[in-house]
Image (tube, rainbow, N blue to C red; front, side):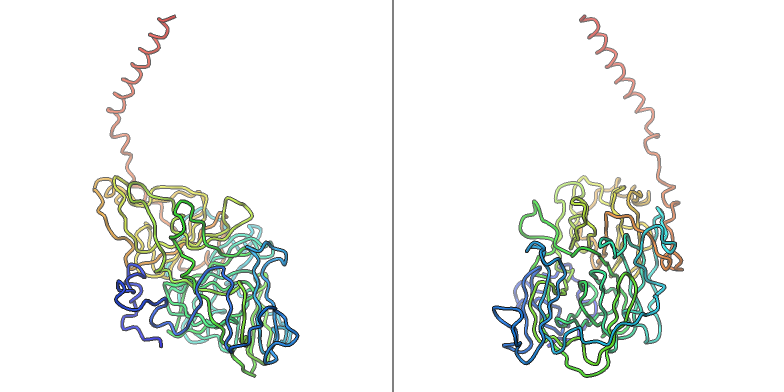
Length: 495
């Protein structure tokens, strides 16, 4: 049975999940003590689950009669002829098939969500300015559920093009009462920042807390309850691709996010004859269908297209143990491919507790420009890699090829003092949604009173140290010129 945590920040205070295992002094466990559900582990596996033993057909998928009169329903998320390694599908055995509904009606547009990020859309904005937002407000009252609380910040592309990305925040204060949601556009990667999410899916239950993530894939029905009250978090949405584990290359077989730590639900059905609504998001528009039975009536299922979650405290950090920084790809938890073979559509990165030991190395993030667009959020704690105000529940955005780095005071301290071997990001997890694509910013984010621009005055104090060494430089140049002249004279004299 799950327990109530005496310290709500118990899993925020640990350096790594390994601490919970107490060096083998207790039986090992894979989920947090207050997680009420059981799971199946693995990544991109073939999974199978049945809530009633003997229900799942064996040796075939669509028998003439499924046990107990259940209906077989096939969910395919890839082309039928896609290569086996990327073919995504599941079979569900349910009391009523999804087709049993009463048709669709249009819902009013949500002015705070967006799906078309092409610059010709007058409701999105292009800017090279480094932007940031203070924590987004959680609405008061108790009438804003997960769907109503969606707010889009930035993105690229359009879901009808089947390649693109959107970044959202959600802020909700109410359970989804007799309502389910289907994202027909793409996959959601959800990162709760405040408050847990109790998620009911067609495949079973998922309990997701701050410090964990959950992936609900395209076309999968789900419902979100808020057991801790008002909740806020971040969402990365991708179109035309699925998340996968990054390749490890020279790291070998293990490291970063390990496949065994991803958890999938077990079958749990709900038979209710009552009115339900199912909200569909398609091309950024919202539609609603109604039905007189629960959409979560799946008694058994099998396949590899299943929602899943991951505890970020289990991430195995790697880094330099001699000199210099390694590129931030070492912080990649999940990646999604684009049509460009050398540039991903999206990477999901985390910056979590780890050791910093590089010797004779400039320790802060070095001044840099890179092609990636970077959207950052903070789940909890303090993040030392930013030079502006960055708080849990807030966000920042930096466009590709825009320079960034720390203020002079931090540069000066880092170059004058020998850094200690130290643990960094203790009690903190920051996240990054990174893409090879430039983002455009939505009206909601652009006009938000939480937005503030990164003040370039913070770099006014960057000293021209080079000019202070002009006499020394001139002597070196003069000596070098004299050596060149002497060398040329010798060469000319030899002829």
